[in-house]
Image 1 (cartoon, rainbow, N blue to C red):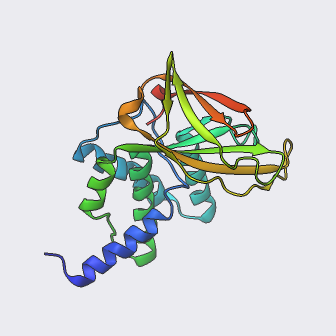
Image 2 (image 1 turned 180 degrees about the horizontal axis):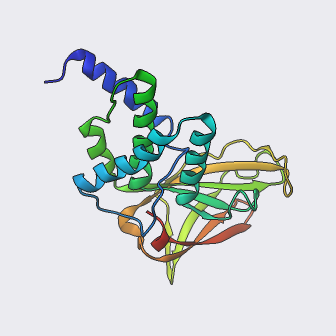
Length: 220
């Protein structure tokens, strides 16, 4: 049985790990994995851990995170089109590899090996829904308030099971509309084709829409 100290340490690590989930993603890509084995999960953790282990400077860490953040993004590339609509797909591998990167960071910080507790790995593997963080620009601070998002695959329209309130728009310093915002929706894994070519459609309360293409076969 784990000691109280070990359990407390595990909870501290988990708290830190949860804080970075929205920032990082996986490095490999070949279709969204709906079902992962324990071995697959461990490999995903390792895939996230190794590049962070090798990062020896703040600049190295920045490069690792930048590379990871692009792997599950669909739509516009923020480096080329900062105000183009896009989304980050928080798949199971996304989360596990993010945990792996944080394991490496915490291990360096505490100067000892830190690993995610098995029960939290299982929780990720068993997740029934995929989170989708939509990012886009508009003309005022509240342009994304009340926005909804759906997938279109062929003749099938897939609605999200819930949507978080959009963030208040932040000033956009680059070209394009004046404000940037984002919101998160959840889609049940069993509601869409994880290998399908998909159109992501954002619906605004005033009847306007914004859409972009996503090839799920290139995302994990």
